[in-house]
Every structure is written in structure tokens, then in C-alpha cells.
Image (tube, rainbow, N blue to C red; front, side, top):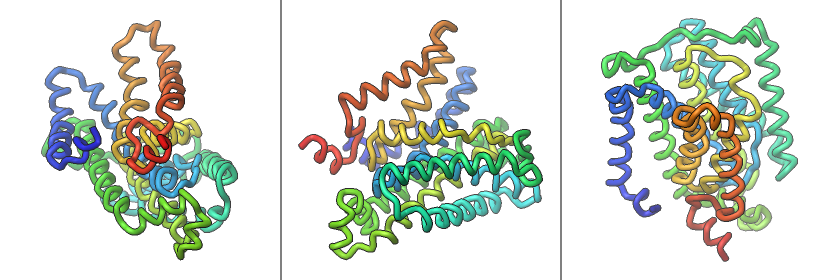
Length: 320
């Protein structure tokens, strides 16, 4: 399966099928599926971003969703100031990168559980600041976002337009991840994850490379947050709770840390299954959809601790 995913022809066919999906869903009168697929795409971007820190560099981050929120609110504030939408997206990514770098400079001396606790605390602090900064973010009432219809020439349906934009974002994130993974930087991150002391003794500037991984991951969160704000035309602090960070971590762990294909599969399963179950099953089963979510994670932990589609390196490590 990995060889199939690695084939250029297979990737091209998958991309073409994904691009045609919203039009097929409209043809069979199932527009709900387009929204579900768009949400899955947003979490694919987030999962690929967190994969830089958790999968490659081994930095346990439980506050990643706060940078998703920063990207979304930056876009909303910029659109309120009548900044053109493409520039608002660029601003969202830039400000998210800057905030992530500032945080990384202060906390990356920590490791393991201590780093996880600090990032979790930052995530809650960011949400509370957004919730209480009424003059800028409109507090718990949320913010309206000026509409932007970038692909009206392709489809009049905003859901189809933003699905295609999100698909482009996922494609960009996959290409960037593949390039970095096979570069000298990616190999340095893996060395740091495996043994930080040995990596330092080998001449790798560990602090700088950890900061690079921590910072670059924010570009994905900022992009996803900007697309989310423009698509929904409304942002509220309740969209960025701690549970969302746990979901992104679960996506990376279930699919396989350090595996691009694994992250995509993890997002498809964990984000796609609950709404599809709600859509297809009877009312009695809807209340059990999160039970199935937990069962999937438990079974994967017991029988596939390396993830469903792990990287070749990680699979060899855990199978030996």
C-alpha cells in the first residue's frame, strides 16, 4: 500500500478523484459529504503540521490547536479591516509563525511530559485571552468574517469552492512535508528524536533544529485557521478547545508518527467516521459514535503501536 501511495501515477489519480468528489456528491444530492470532506482536509493540514514536531522531532505538543485559532482570528481581524483575503491568509501564516517562534524560544529547553504540560497550558491561555479580549476578538460572542468567494467561476456553492482550496492546501502541505522529510533537515530531526545527546555529539545544533521544527509546523496551523475562518465566515473561542488538540495528536499517533500517508489516513478515520456515522446510522447509534472513536484508538495502541501506516524507520524500530 505504501508503494502505491508513493507512486506518482497513484497520487495523481487520487488527487484527480479528490478534485472530482464535490461534483459527484452534488450530482447524487449529498452536499453534506462535501462539508465533511472539507473538515477532514483541514485536519489533514493540521496533522501534517504537528507531524513536524511530534513525528519528526519527537516534541510532544498538546497546544497545537491554539495556533489554528491564531490563524483564524488573524484572518477575521484582517478581513474586518478590509485587507484583501489572499493578504489576510499570508498575514495569518506570518503571525502564527512569529508567535510559535516566540513560544519555542522560551519552552524548548523542556522535554517530554514537561513540554506537553506547558504547551497544553499555552493552548488554554490563548483560548482564554481570545475569549476575554472583547475589544479585538468580540469575546465569546465570536466574530463575523467578511465573505470571500475565490472560485465562483468553478462552482456557485461556497462549500465546493473552499473544499477545492483546502484540497490545494493539503497538496501543498504533502509536497512540503515530502521535500523536508528527505532533506538534511528532516534527517537531523529524526536523529534528535532518536537520541538527542547522540545528535548533539554528532555536531547537530539541537536547539536550532528543534526550534525550526516547532516554528515551521505553525505555517500549517495558520493556513488551516485562515481557510477555516474564510469558509465558516464566523469564528468563536469554542471552536478551539483542548479536545481539538487531542484530536490532532490522535491523528498523528493513529496514522503513524513521521508518516505522511499515515497522517492522511488518521485524519480520514478519526475526523471522517463520526459525522458519517451520524449521517448513516439510526438515532440510537449516534450517541455511541465516540465509543467507536475510543475503541479504534485502543485497538490501534494494542495491535499497531507504530501506527496504521508508519514510516519505514519507525516500523523497523518497533518490530525489532
